[in-house]
Length: 123
Image (cartoon, rainbow, N blue to C red; front, side, top):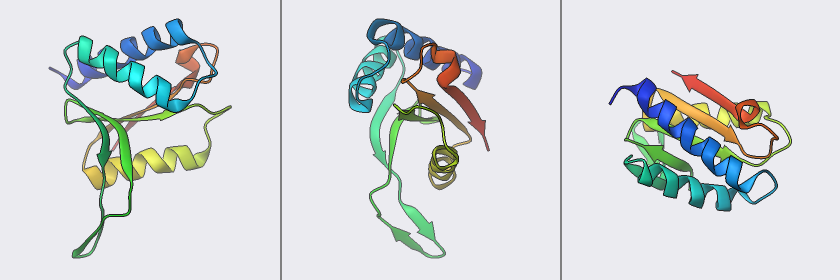
């Protein structure tokens, strides 16, 4: 499956979850429901995937985790915030860098229209 097809499916699933639940819930609720939708769409999903920090020759297990990794290629970072901040972008870009994934989706469910809470990143 092509990367654009994967991200299209992911966004469709996220829209379905947002339509059903609306804004205002905890991030963990959206994560659970999105994983359910992604798996029902036939996608390979890993949840709370550990991301070690690599510094020179050492690997540091600092407790960083990707919210959802889809098809071993797309990093998804979920938020329930009033607005994205630069720290959110830095977070997803760091996860992408350390996991060596080139595509990421930052999804904020705390919006009226989900399209206003979606950002795609490419390294």
